[in-house]
Image 1: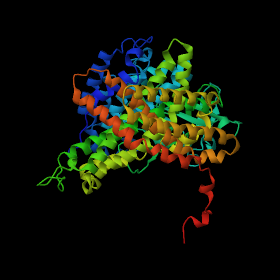
Image 2: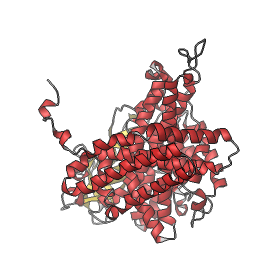
Image 3: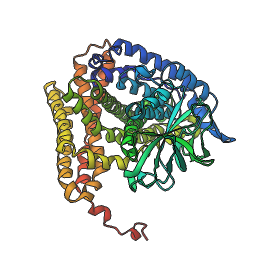
Image 4: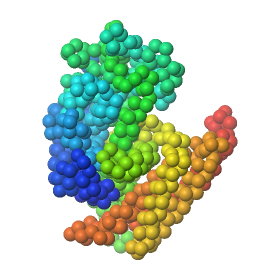
Amino acid sequence: MADTYSAPVRDMLFVLETVCDLEGLSRLEGYEHADPDTVRGLLEEARRFVTDVIAPLNRVGDQQRSRLVDGNVVTPDGFKEAYRSFAAAGWPGAHMPAEWGGGGLPRAVGIAIQEMVTSASMAFSLCPLLTQAGIEALVVHGTPEQQDTYLTKLVTGEWAGTMQLTEPQAGSDVGALTTRAIPQEDGTYRLFGTKIYITWGDHDMTDNIVHLVLARTPGATPGTKGISLFLVPKFLVDGDRNDVGVVSLEHKMGIHASPTCVMSLGDAGGAIGYLIGEEQQGMRLMFTMMNNARLGVGTEGVAIAERAYQQALSFSQERRQGRATGATESSLIIEHPDVRRMLLTQKALIAAMRALIYYEASLLDLADRHPDEDVASRSAERADLFTPIAKAWCTDLGVELTSLALQVHGGMGYVEETGVAQHMRDSRIAPIYEGTNGIQAIDLVGRKLPMRKGGVIADLLADIDTTVSALRQAGVASEAEALAAALASVHEATTWLLARRPEEPDDALAGATPYLRMLGFTIGGWLLGREAIALRDRDSGDSGWVDAKLATFSFYATQLLPQVTGILPAVVAGATPLFAIEPKYLAGG
């Protein structure tokens, strides 16, 4: 019943090699050192590190919480030491640019390491995740001076980063923010305002924290078009403390070790900030950070589900309850069909989620490095299409599968002593982070489906159809037909949404969330189908592992994919059913 974690390196490598074409990635300029053998050794070392150093802190962090002491955040026992070991080993910058002190690995490999760290302790993992988003913004948009001053220290983990976006009156509606940035004669700005929900906004794990802050300059255009992005360090380069501090910490449902801060800027004359990019271009720059963070948050869904699944599987092989069919004495609960159903549902969906997340990361690698401009461009388009799906589908399932893991434990899962309840509490924030999942669905239907006049989604559906044909040719008949049925339903839903969106946008918005779920399940089936085809020609030396992989795909195709067709009516129903009841009658009577 112990809450332990061991990264599934074999499964991770299999996805990297088959779905992401790790061999092909290692032939791209700059990735030559990321050959499969090297990556295998790297992931094994990462597994040892997170198992020994980070995973033991998960329960400690939940129980002790980060706390505010004399205006500074103090992290739970062991966190500071673990983070410094983490940085010293080079893990924060594994897939960051080598020119700034990173490992220069493909993003697909970096996301596998990120999954391990997140499974080990989601609260711990949020600090390097946010730092990575800040690094991305500076690499793309920072001035040479900003890059020289901050990037190496951020990439190596010597310093950490945050995103300060949200305000009390401006949650998802970022255009309503009121933080002010007043230009100074020396080219800096003085910032004044209050930010809320700032993850790792302050802590004692690094010597400095670099905040990326959205604010509004004098005379800026109202709404999102008038927002600018600023770099505001906790400590200035000369060592002086900047005018940015913590007002309080939120008392949260989960991720207790991760300090969620209310931050104040400008209480003593103005926080010194440095403009990134140009004034009133903050929203465009913000999405460089947000898209990086959204893939990272999607990874949280996979990671927390994997951690909870490992615990549920272990429990099911220890706990005796009732008698299985034909048994003469109390049976292990893993012998009961319904427990097997719950375990296989977790296993199959985690495999699909992992494939989707890693595949999107590999698309970003191709977009960055592929010498053929057409391949790079189309990879970038598909990555854009996948971003809301990776974030929303994977985090929704992270909650659902963690709930299933708790269900496997029965009543023992509902008490804190077993530890699985923590995973349930921790998982719930991910569908809210970095744009709620409803916003992701709106983005998918409103912005991503119309890309290239529907050509991007059409290309994806054509690729899925190619895999259906390959499965048929390989003799995987029932699974091929299940994927074909799901694909036909997605085709119908996609055609309806593209036609409806311009004329009746509310109809399209009403179907957005169920459509995202349809597409997520179908993409998951497609990627597992590709894995199954690869397995048929693979000599792994372990027929049991291969058989288990094929059986997992079969379970997914025949027992999980059919729900795609069942969701179709909800997509094409339009907005009328959602507004059929007047608000005053929603409460009943």
